[in-house]
Image 1 (cartoon, helix red, strand yellow):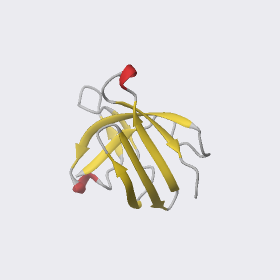
Image 2: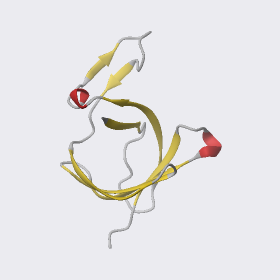
Image 3: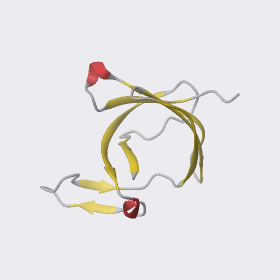
Image 4: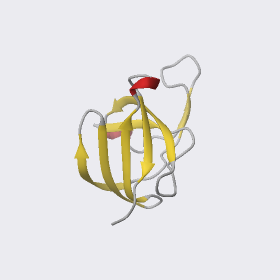
Amino acid sequence: MLKSWAVPKGLPGTPGERRLAIEVEDHPLSYGDFEGTIPEGEYGAGKVRIADAGTYDSLAWTSDRIEVVLHGREFSGKYVLIRFRKAGEKNWIILKGKEN
């Protein structure tokens, strides 16, 4: 499974910068290279773009907080996802963590 979030404004680029991340349906691994447009009226309608590919190291993974170190072509370093319950069950805040 691919754990998935929509990040409308893209991943933050500097430590402490925050962005909204909306949890979306998990996807089978076979979807890992899909890019294109899902037609209006279908689930997930709109443009789909894979922002990056690579690996990650999990530092912490709970139902409300996820900390990972990304090793991608475009994005690398520590990122933290924190569930933002006040804004809805599927809304998270993602921020770039400080490098040690």
